[in-house]
Image 1 (cartoon, rainbow, N blue to C red):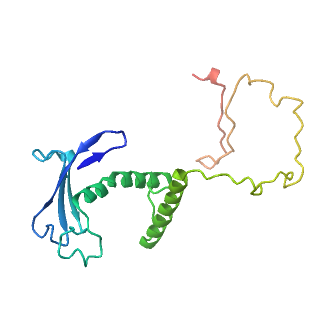
Image 2: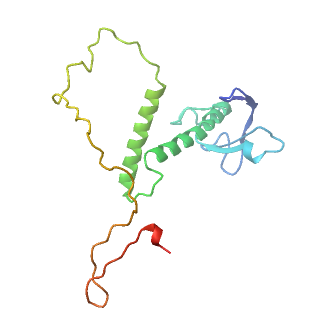
Length: 197
């Protein structure tokens, strides 16, 4: 099968139903091998997939709760996995799921559902084509003046708060603290930077 990528290039992939243990094209769980090189089976370009989508010719295809799928459809669906994982990673990073959270299992699942829904709505809105503008629709923000009364511009300052840099900047004195021996409270002396050793 030909796999087409977003950058325009295509790759030829080969796929087959494998039989191993309880897996097989007639079994409820199929084992699929998809690769670009059937002779070498390179690690980064070979997928081993288990799926419960029945083979179109399987005896239980008509009674299965899942629609039958041929090899090309299974490889296409599995090719969506990196995009789903990347999108989920973005959801986690943008909405705080990458941070450690202490919640109950039910709260985590509810939060995850809400986050995924919000992200899906945002994505749908982002990719939706802009609709035609209705010139007869009322202006949602009519210019009726300010809603909180007239605005007042503060007068311009007439004098500078500071005339320039201080000649000898020093640290502020901390408040008095009791001395360790119980005597008079101590005081920290500060000096200008120029007099420090």
